[in-house]
Image 1 (cartoon, rainbow, N blue to C red):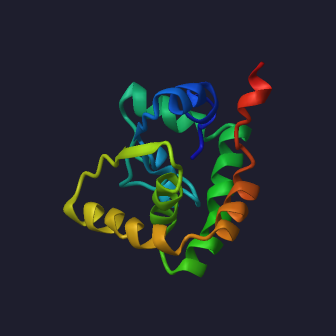
Image 2 (cartoon, rainbow, N blue to C red):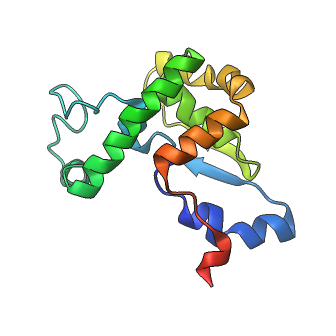
Length: 150
């Protein structure tokens, strides 16, 4: 949802020509799309307690002006999630499922309760209208255009 160019624009000819779908990994952007980092990186979270070079590097990306802008977008998604009676994570997963070129999503859940919560996205998917999609697209403002690549 945060990084879409390669998947939605560069691979577009492959979907159309071969009718393949794709697998989405890290659909919640390492937890960013859950909303739990909307108010910063609290202790007890993977980025709040970042000790590994990888976690520190990822955290630092969200501390830049561009990264903070992404978190602001996630905050704005909350109103749509509330309207649908779901979490930001469930809304994000449902949005991905609405893409006709997505065949599989690997959630990377680390706890059983996360799996249960993520599966609610299937119910949200059914409630997600074109109007909701348009609102999400307006907030995210990152829909790739295949034809602008050339």
